[in-house]
Amino acid sequence: MAEHEQVQEHERVQEHVRVAVIGSGFGGLGAAVRLRREGITDFVVLERSDSVGGTWRDNSYPGCACDVPSHLYSFSFAPNPEWPRTFSGQEHIRAYLEHVTDTFGLRPHLRFDSEVKRMAWDTEQLRWEIETVRGTLTADVVVSATGPLSDPRVPDIPGLDSFPGKVFHSARWDHDYDLTGKRVAVIGTGASAIQIVPSIQPKAGRLTLFQRTPAWVMPRMDRPISGAERALHRALPVTTKLRRGLLWGIRELQVQAFTKHPDELGFVEQIAKRNMGAAIKDPALRAKLTPDYRIGCKRILLSSTYYPALARPNVDVVAAGLSEVRGSTLVAADGTEAEADAIVFGTGFHVTDMPIAERVVGEDGRTLAETWKGGMEALRGSTAAGFPNFVTVIGPNTGLGNSSMILMIESQLNYLADYLRQLNVLGGRTALAPRPAAVRNWNHRVQERMKRTVWNTGGCTSWYLDASGRNTTVWPGTTAEFRRATRRVDLAEYEVLRPARENTGKNTGENTGENPAKGAAKTPAKAAGADAEVSA
Image (spheres, rainbow, N blue to C red):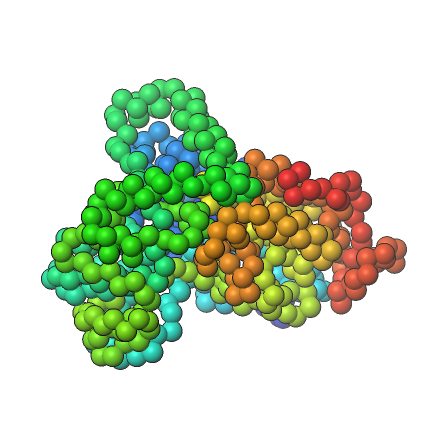
């Protein structure tokens, strides 16, 4: 197909591309690189902001850094020998993504300030109609790489609208607002908050932390990477690969404790308690900060500065969530009151209810959000029933509790590449529709494995769980297992869709118990291995 083929629609020319990628964070840029490496140049990357970077562009709060080692939190196909620290800061990760964009020639494909307002599957033409704030286009395949950490979640607090001071979320930090000498309230104790608190504590006049649930915090073994180390990595790239492999292997060995033997994590809890005890001498404060659930149930946090900051005389810890705002007075659920000039929400993101799902309309006219009303689920974390030629990067049950999401992203890019190869082999105007039974079977196996994990048995409520208490975010296995499960597309898990006029009348959904979509014919694909296990 010619690059950016022009097709006539509704008496006007409309742009058509082979693939439209939504988002330009790690997932979107990785997809773009993989498309080019597969020889596909007829694609665009639609980005709602004015630059690449995704969550590492949006999160620029003081102290923002990654809790995965730098050499593991980078693409295997784009090693970086120049990482300055073992755990890199936001500015270095964002610079890395800009470097990847330039190195792999992605800029001609980028469409900035192009937020997607709506995407709908055209069952007649077998393509996606995409409406953005800058215009419309169509695509044969859509790759959704918006990511779960893209839309901030601010709780609905009574009286918040009347607060006379400054209010912002950690992912929308207001760098023009000076916190010096101010009474600052930080809401939440997640990964962002534990970095923000020690970064702003020295300048704040008074800092009040509203803690609904204490977190387990391990020491952060961060240090500068020496010039000699960087020179070695430049001269001998294999040393970078070895370093990455060692980091990966250690984390793979840890997985069973999270997924099969949570009781083994007791030893890790003792390390976390020692980390707290070294800085928190006040027994009452220590009691407030000690979790009552198994470590790992909620995300394990890394910091060597969080506890020392909480022990400073200008910091108060309120062991209850914020429940009401009365003017400049903040009231906690336990009745505690605190005065504030600024409120910083470190309350996370819409993870199990991603807003993009409201904007994607499938073959039966329902949105992805409506389809996922009972809980997110996707075949091999990538494709959803009722949404042909729609591939999600960092989809349901692809998250990790102890390793690098880049490993999972690259596995899904393998799946995407084979998906596109299968479409090419099938030829013509073709779409692949995940069989609902295949999606259900995959999800059932994932949820069965989830039952014994620390995320389900650890005794906490976390953002890993959806409104019904089901874990639809985390992968209950090793990254190697997921890599094997997504190495190639199993066509037996899909039906082939062709325009109705191209159908021969044979095999239109027979023996599937599923009705073909209006305007398209579904043909059972022939392939082996339909009963592949989750860990296959």
